[in-house]
Length: 100
Image 1 (cartoon, helix red, strand yellow):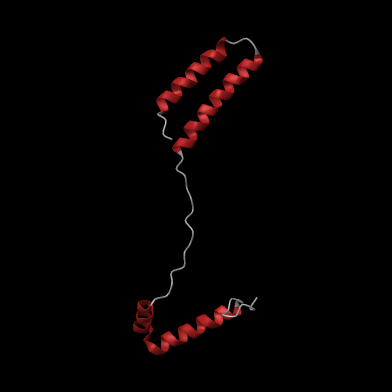
Image 2: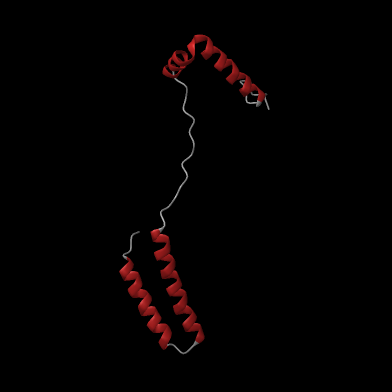
């Protein structure tokens, strides 16, 4: 919902005039509450809604394997994969469902 700020300010001015002319405290508080709500609308409108994007771990593909072999040589790629599997088992997140 995109409300133009000038229309919100105009509504605030109208409520302020009503608040100045009222003689009862309850009515005054009601008008001030409306002004506060309009202020909140303006403040919330200017803030962009920041939503953190969830981290998605990419799946390893055959091209990743080939690139790893090119960078590290075939022996280096095998060693890296062994080391990665050992780290995975140390964390208790191995292949077995009984790993805790």
